[in-house]
Amino acid sequence: QVHLVESGGGLVQPGGSLRLSCVASGMTSRYYILGWYRQAPGNERELVADISMWGSTTYSESVKGRFTLSRDTTEAKDTLYLQMNNLQSEDTAVYYCNLKGSATYWGQGTQVTVST
Image (cartoon, rainbow, N blue to C red):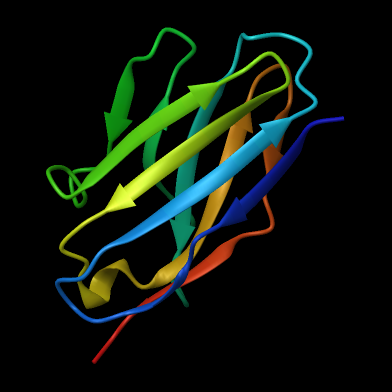
């Protein structure tokens, strides 16, 4: 069974930085896309960024140049990081880790709040 565990959310002032982590375990193949989505109150869940098994990345226009994905893959797990710089109030949301393989899995979410 695939498990996704996020960490790293919190409260930060505008212009600040946070790094989110997602540890993915239980995968039985390497054919998947790993990524981050977010959902703000009253909004639909949207893609923030993702990375394929070949290492190609996709970023939403709203985060390009500010957010960066990186990953650390071992035999037992895949850890995805999202470095978020120059955070703005519109980045406030619950951030979810997502794995798309033969099935789709979601983490429990981590709250990011950007406020003075």
